Length: 381
Image (cartoon, rainbow, N blue to C red; front, side, top):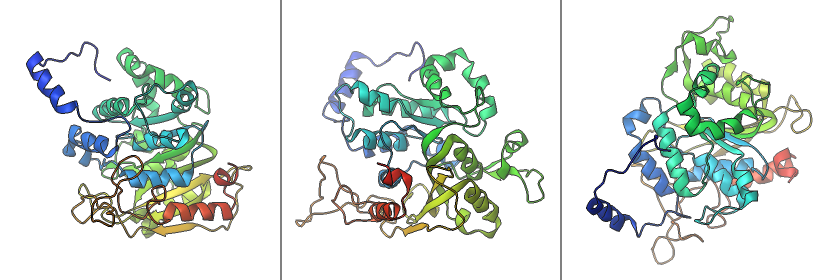
């Protein structure tokens, strides 16, 4: 995680002060909200905000994981990983438990090494790798790469310093390439991501690699929204029958000028669900209205192409946060904050039932929808 030759420059007296402050803090099996808050502190707001990089609240991540139902043996990636919430919670789902300070079994390690994260910001990646080590995943597949600029990956991955840090994860990622040496298409079962919204891609070299970079007349656009290119890029990461959850600004779902994007998605994949998130969800960092899109790539066996099919729609009415962006927690009959089985506060939201602590909500209702409509990743358990 840290550069070669890094050392702690604290004097013994200062180090003892730090240790006395930290010795009573429990990080293993802890509420990972503390990881998020550390991430927010360590990666400056200006650094993230200029490209719309905001970490995804844990209850939104859990909804996505519960709805896409990842299983042991499946490969998962987050193409805009940030603090790696999606990969970490995917591991929780696969192993059936939170991280502990015990060495993970060989079977679980095999599952963990099938989960990947990519981010273009080196500082973000280093912080995420460090926090993931604290959280307990040990060896990590979090890589410093620009997801959209995949043509230049080979330049990055040929650098010896880069390979010293990321080589093991890169070797595992290469094995998922669909076409030999090409970094364009991969064979992942699952992708979950909250790509950056802010800013446009203006480099013609990058735009020219994407179908969504074209105008209606077939000519290339001079600039394209970053999240638009992420939609196409993310679909390239999925194998046929693979499934995706992606957080997008609300306009992509209802702007008339974005109709070609919706057509592109429906040509490539079955739209499984759209869940509208509350406007407070990403506060205090941004008040942008967002929704989560769930799709499954067309496949003759897992997801046969049809012209007409039902789509699940859900709207969150409880954000789990107030207008100021502070979390709202569930209280018990005595007016005290209620704790779950792990001793964590329970965020008051309607995206999933928090292992029965909340009323059956969006994720659980989607499961019923998925079973009724024979969606492969639920029926074939």
